[in-house]
Image (tube, rainbow, N blue to C red; front, side, top):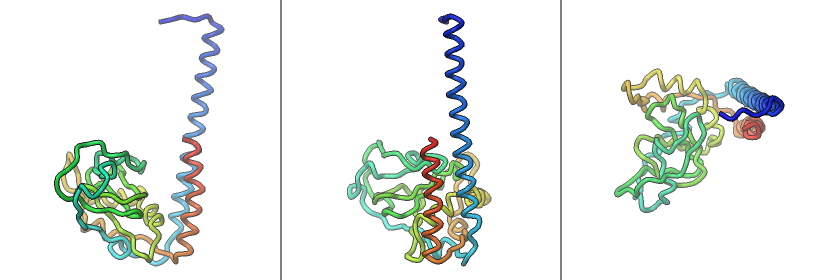
Length: 205
């Protein structure tokens, strides 16, 4: 182990402490922004409706060769903690996949506690272990996405799973999950407020 002079050691320690302080401050900013988002969502209580009424499952199948391979979504290339997805880099498949479209909400139904939920920003296809919610014209996709991108929804799903090693959510129960559905203008305002805090999180990262 190299042993620099006392002066250099002190400089290194000071720099490390400064970095640690910045990291802790960033974590605090992220936590505060997430708290603000949850507070915004918890205040909404208009017109409770189940997901099956405003974002039913999409189950249409298309051939794999009709999509870009990088747009194929599986439970493996969905990221934990609502962090989105990464491009698929596996082998091309023979056969069909479940179609998803821009604005759909995808959720891995294997180990729901990993919080793999993504608002699709493009068209593509996914594996059967990924559920596709397709919001109706009554709701904003982003609004529904934020409403289920919450610990309360994950807890709801986990309360009725099957399997121990690879627990799966009960689709019949999941689609009954109810969320408040205010008027479109209010939905837009809520999403806009959340975007402000999402920007703070992105900046802190």
